[in-house]
Structure formats: C-alpha cells, structure tokens
Length: 281
Length: 318
Image (cartoon, rainbow over all chains, first blue to last red; front, side, top):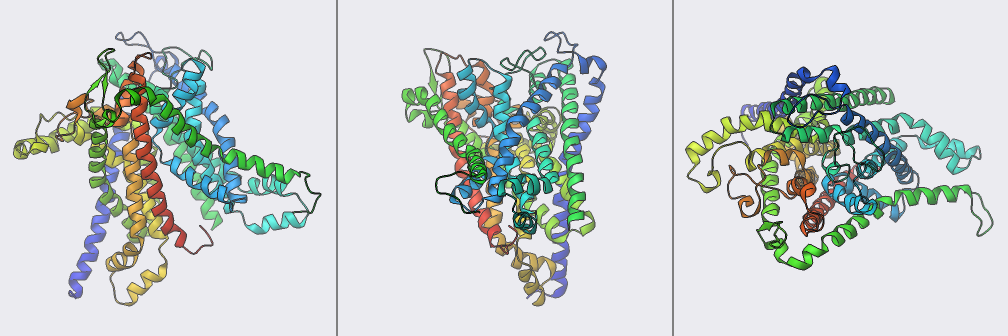
C-alpha cells in the first residue's frame, strides 16, 4: 500500500478536481446570463414590449404578441396539465400498490426524459391534422403532455411526506377516504404540489421544439384558440435565424424577457422549497 | 372501507376509479404516440422500405423523392457520444464533490446553481451557441486542432464553429444537470455503513468514496449517464442552431469540423417547409418514429438501472 502522504495527496487531488468540475460547469451558465443581459438589455424599450414585430427586414416593432402568446400557452397548458398531473400523483401516492400504478409510475419517468420534438410530431398528427390547422390548443396539448409527468411526480412525492397518522386520524373520525384525501391529505401537502406545478410551468415556458409543429408562430396578436399563435421561445429562434443585425438584437431582447420569466419562477420556487424543507426537518 | 351491499358504488370507489383513469392517460398517450407515428410514417416506409433506414440520400423534390435517415442517426450518435465523453466525467466530478466532499455550507447553493443550468431554455443555449460559444470553440479548440492534427481525417475541414464538435460540446453542458443530479441522488442512497466500514479500515475520504460509494452505486451511475444520453439524443433547438444543418451524404459525420445534422434538428428544420401533399412530411414523421424508439429504449434501460439502486435504500422512504 502506498505511503500515507501519497494517499493523503490523492485525497486532496480528488477534492481539487471536484471543485474544478463545478467551476467548469458554472462558466457556461455565467456566460449565458451575462451575454443575455448585455445584449438583451439595450433591445428593451416600451415599443419592444408593447408592439408586434415589424415587417421582416425593416426592423422596428417588438415581441408583445410573443409575450402574450407565451402567457396564454402557460394558462391553457396548466388548465389541462395540472389537474391530470395532480390526479395521477394522488393515484400513485394513495393507491400506489397495484400493478397499474407501477406501470404508470414507470411510464411517467420514461416520459419525463422524452424528446419534446417527438411529442410535437405526435400532437401534429393527432390534433393539427385532425383540426385542419395549427392552433394554440395544439400547442397547449403538446406542452401538457410534457408537464403532466413532472406534476405527477412532485405531487406523489409531496403526498408521501404527509404522515400516515393524519390519514388514520381522519379515518378514525369516520371520514370517507376520498374526502380525507382531497380535504386533508392534499391540503396538507398543498405547498409542495403548488411548487411542483410552478416548476413545471417554468420548464414548459421555455420549450420550443414542440411549438414549431403545433402553434407555428405568427406576426400578429392572439386571434383565437384555433389559430396559429406566437410564443417567446419560438420568436427567439426565428429572430436568430434572420440575417439582419436588428433581428439578432431583438432575439437577445426576447431571450432576456424569456429568461427573466423562467429564472424568476425557478428562483422563487426553489427558495420557497428550501425554506419549507428546513422547517420540515 | 365500510361494508356495503354487493354491486353498489360508493364515493370512494368512484374517486379511486376516476384517479386511476386519469393516471392511465400516460399509458394512452404513449400507445397513441406509437400508433400515430407509425401511421403517419407509413407512406414513406412503404415506398422506401429498408432503404429508409440504410439510405443516405435526402431529396424532397416531388418526382425525385428519396429519403434515407442513416446520416442523421449517425449524426445523433456522434454528437451524443461527444456529449457523454465530456459531460459524464464532469457530472460525476460534480456529483462526488457535492454529495461527499463539499462543506455543507456551500453544498446547497452550489447544487442550486448547477440545477439552474437545466432551467435555461434550450433555445437560449442555441442563441448563445451561435453568437458566443461558437467563436470560443472555433478559436480555442478547432483552430489548433486543424493546424496541428488536420492530417487526421476526423479533424479535417475548415474551422468555422458551426459543426458537429460545437453541437457535441453544447450538449455536454446541457446534460450536466441531469447526470449530476441523478448521480448525486444515487450516491446519497448508498448506506452510510459502507462509508463507515471503509473509514474504519483506515481509508482516506477519497478511498472511502472510491471503494465504498462508487463501487456500490456503479449501476446507478451508469443509469445516470444513460439518462444523459437520452437527453442528448432528443435535444433539438440548441443543436439545430449550431450544427450547420447539412443534408444527405454531406451530413454523414465523417469529421468533427464539418457541418452535420441530427434526427431532431432535421425535423425542426424541415417540418414547416414540407409540402403537405408530398412524401416529405411522412418521411419526417418516420424520422420521429426512429427517434421515438431510440428515446424509449434509452429511457427504459436507464430508469431500470437507476431504480434498482434507489430501491435498495432502506425501504421506508423511497
């Protein structure tokens, strides 16, 4: 066996390497945030935030329709995805021993890592071809499919943290099981469920790939649920592809608005979680 | 449950079945997905048969149509391989550091920052990739590679920054949060008795990690890497924006410094331009079907590996 000094040195080396890995991973994050702020801030103006895009090649205008589209998309997606996800989570946590529950849990995990563009194609063939047009609805269905497993998982985890004594106490009082679950267990775990839903909103609001083949993008404000619509991530992509400097500036501006939205959701939620865990343990 | 007459329904049953039905929607979605993708790609698959998988030509012009997905499958595999080669060691280093070594005072804030990497939308990685990172890769990696190792086939080509190598490195960054957080979870599930046993034999901290933790968690760590592979294979926007988007035989990834194409980037690039009455959309859906099976196989395999390690832990709190 090597001498103690050498083994101690190896230990120090491993520590240093570990720290280096963390530092290397932080560099891109820092650079991304820095560049988005540096290039995006000059693009922000009242016109940028309140007007739809100008004619292609001429500049001017803004991303107001994309901001509106993203907000509508978030709301529609949450209306479809949150109830489905929460009910799945309740099923998994409260009736989770059956073989069906095992299959659902496993497939949720699989869907969690699934390429979003494949979900986009699926919704295209099912909804867009079915309805005969690109639409806000199709986009929301695609995003809801991505959102559902995230909400289901966080809901299941937060329900499992509720002590079983609370369930037993309710049962001892003769309260029905469904009433116990909805009014007592779910309400105890409420903050965890809300947190999961908010994190899933942060995740889907940055999704781009499935929107290409569902909402398509648009130059105008919202025109109806069955019409094409714009969204911030889609707008960032289209602007970046245009061969004009003004478009690139606007692209950075749109990216800044998007990243502020997503990171604000993330930071607020994660800080809230940390406080809750500290109290809980 | 309270006793009741046979055949009568209580609110409890109703609630239970309702929850079961809604929870089963994930099964419905996955089954429908296979059916829809298979049906949508049928025209192209019927026309080209095996050639769809083995062909390299990609020509959507009506009348001269020819669709082969081999270059994009290879492009996906090569970019993902680069991503794993760079991303997995980094992620393991991060996970080991955060789970076993870092002082607890900075542990939470560091892991919080690493998790923020996952919160940045893919399209913003792409924007940064096109206008910032591409220049770093071109000047710091590709110029020297091309100058000193340009005689090796895989380093041939003009260093331009929009190519397979840049796409692979961006993917490496993007898989770090997934791989490192799952690895960390797996390591924290290793029973303390193993660490204590190693320490009691006089091991240093690193030796305890290597012998006690890493050895035990091996299959879970492997699973974490495969989950990273799953992310890399399906990642679309960032890759689309930096890979150069070549088509047909030119998309075969013969050199790291050449433009390429992955399955996902091909779909993102061409979907809106495809003529709906031609075979083009059907061929793109076919690419989606191939990608679906890749993703399904990778994710199922990875989840099985990871859950095997996590299940051993205690049993009380899963």
